[in-house]
Image (cartoon, rainbow, N blue to C red; front, side, top):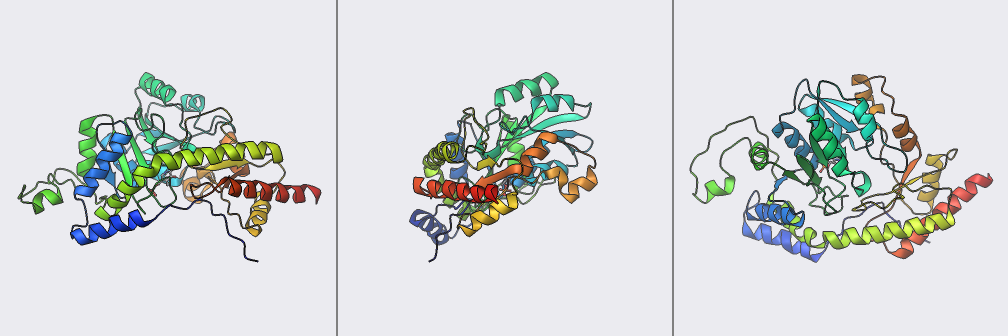
Length: 378
Ligand SMILES: *Cc1c(COP(=O)(O)O)cnc(C)c1O
């Protein structure tokens, strides 16, 4: 009998996305046009900010945030090691040095303010927070910390669109529309900045530092342009934006489905496998991007993942600790982050996406209970 595989995270795509893509092709205008601008406006409006800049990825967005905020060579930026490497790479792209900060604890696996305070140096210029799993970090506290030290605050909001006051506390923030995120444009990102002039700087950096846009020139509103800085090609295209406009209309509903599924996981796991700990036991604003759990000590995570795979259930790890990847270990040797290392050694991510239903959650929890039960009796 063939069992249906429960995937970790699937995008929801349908007729509306198809129709939107066809309309772009029929229009004959493929990049940086009205749809990109409309998507920027709609995304900004949903988050209650004045404006936004669409880019080709969140990684590109984080790079531009740091550039436009003037962070570079000789500067240090605090960052969690419990993140996707893009967060760290953006710091390195501008020539600054990432300073890895431990997480608070295994229940709140967010960057620890007290560990950050202990790592302040006369080179520290900024803090890059990451809303792990969609659970918002304590933004007001980070804002106070940054203001006290005159640091800039950047939010890596890749996991957390359309929740709480995400993107509104950072001096700049970046979102991701990669395929496995809460909404997708295949590849894509969006940037906010507190200061309108910083956002305009980002808009210009996105397209080679040129002073006029492609569409303006095409329409004859502008005949020439100047280049005022070393820019990049980090543009979003109209196909991406057209999908984004459709996906955006469903984002809040999807986030809410993700939260409901997460709550169901919490309830069932507490009943069936109480040995398993679930981070964020205290209620947080969340976009519920991931469903992370912590295996009890002494269980082989690989064996659990193998057992789940045999039952047709995908699982993953978010994340291997970044300071242990060989590239960063060579550059920044000897770093020890005990809480991060313990968390990363036991974390397992279960399937979570709006295409699942409550029965799927039951199936995952039953599968997990069976796998763990078998292991403890062996
Ligand atoms: C996905 C992700 C990114 C990168 O997003 P892209 O749009 O793929 O560049 C950055 N940070 C975190 C935490 C992510 O999960």
